[in-house]
Image: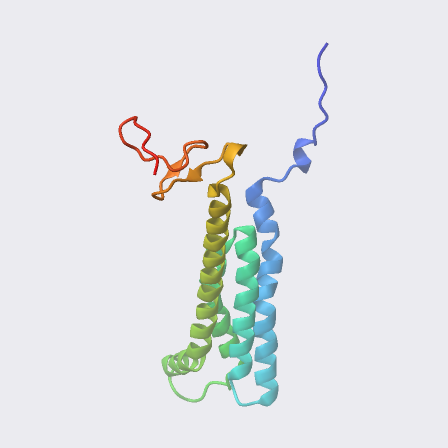
Length: 181
């Protein structure tokens, strides 16, 4: 008799790559929304780009990096904060004067650079914190599995620090001879 398994139709299964892209909208919103709010605060103040963009860009970079790292979509989030800051800086800056456009571009770059650096530094800080947390979690898991549990089948630490199978605790490797202390 043939076994019948219920499976989801092919159209309803989403490949992992598309599932990652589906979460990109919320990650993009997390990156753009705080920067836009900061730019709005700077525009309301009327003095050009300032702390509003910097704080918003850093908050957005941290939020978006945390979301993207959890979902595996860091490829576009890591280089994005400087671009977001550049767009916000241009949007908030006073209208260009009579000078050449290159001079205005240099002014926008100088006005936005501190916020760009802070946002990119925040991305790197989040990634470094995640790497340290992952390393510490791996170290704790490794330490738990290396504890001597005797008959449970795990390895125990010998007298000289080497890892020994259960029941050989304290033995030294001496070419097949068991010389206990």
